[in-house]
Length: 131
Image 1 (cartoon, rainbow, N blue to C red):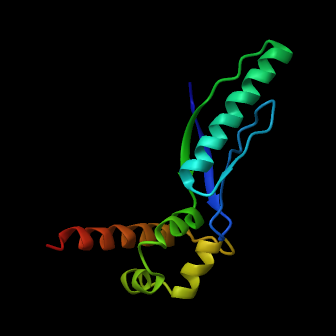
Image 2 (image 1 turned 180 degrees about the vertical axis):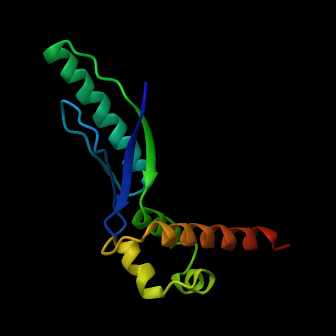
């Protein structure tokens, strides 16, 4: 069974949603106040819709999902632990730009995304090295 990408994003106000671009014979989306809540909601909706579809058509729909966080979800998840000022210093990316990525009003280019994730990891490693 192929892995189907399920995208997780944030609306910038602490709410997460999960969706997929894969074409199923029914709609499926998940939402929640946390990433885990949104994933669980998505999986529950998929399961229930699959059962209903099987009852209606006899067709079995199965999927194996690979969840992928967009930058808005990553930054919303991390903002409780890492300030954008600190992340800006580590990455060289303007604090305002980081806020725009977190709110989803702008999307980073792949190189910027890599730089941000690397910066988050650098901060985490620094914190872990404190004795």
